Amino acid sequence: MTAASALLQYVISGVTVGATYGLTALGFTVIYNTTEIINFAQGEFVMLGGMLAVFALRWGGVPLPLAVPLAVLIVTAVGVLVDRVTIRPMRGRSTLTLIIITIGMSILLRGGAMLLFGKDTFSLPAFSPGGPIEIGGATVLPQTLWVVGITLLTVAGMKVFFERTLSGKAMLACACDRKAASLMGIHVDSMVTLSFAFSALVGALGGVILAPITLTAYDVGILLGVKGFAACILGGLGNPFGAVVGGVILGVLESLGAGLVSSGYKDAVAFVILLGLLFVRPSGLFGASRAERV
Image 1 (cartoon, rainbow, N blue to C red):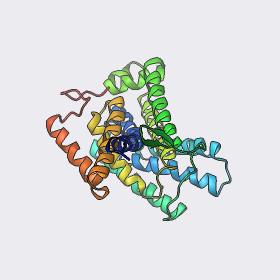
Image 2: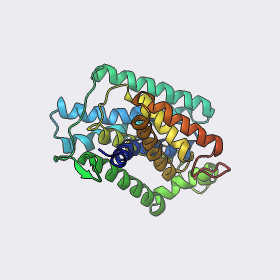
Image 3: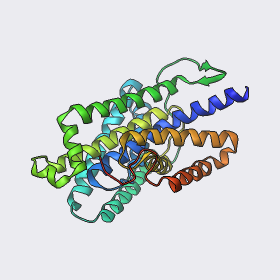
């Protein structure tokens, strides 16, 4: 493999993993925009997506085309439950209190997954058969096309939702000014619940599309959550589409760090570059110099 094809291979691998970081970051952004809190249980939504799909396929006997959407639906319901049981009763408390609650939920979900699924690692089969595709001396797995395609469809679907639907515009109104939105007749609590549902849905999607490429286990949500949060900050906190781009950039930096430096330092290389960027532009690549939630 030539140096050029090796570099292309690193970029392809980075885009694949980075797309999942982007979906995780998208979940962070949606909840932040409506509640002003950082949901540290977001990584667990990603973990649950992959683990529940494996559970449905291996132990439930559900075929893969049904196991994947079933896992996403269950995690979406978990997201709604998290809001109804833990966040809504504490509405009006400080932002720090709500963030601590999400950390507690993260620990609870991770512990529950360990008891239910055990400590072993699992993987899902690829969504479609076929061998690797060669492009410019690099190889592209068919699952990579699923990852990129589903991520692009999710971003496009969210753009249509926010710009063309009444519920999407109501969520944007809550992000701009919750009190004014409430005075205009928008049910803010319902919009917050909807944001948790969206956050869980995109997190679960990231988990199920990545599971055929990398192994999944009850504790993968910790690192995925950290990477997703870093991608969110890199793209600009509060900017949904910046979050996705930030995830892809972070994934590519990681892959290049692993390939050109050492796989043992891939996380360190990516975060050092991230810190360097934030020293230059603290609001992120696509954030305004003055923070504004939209």
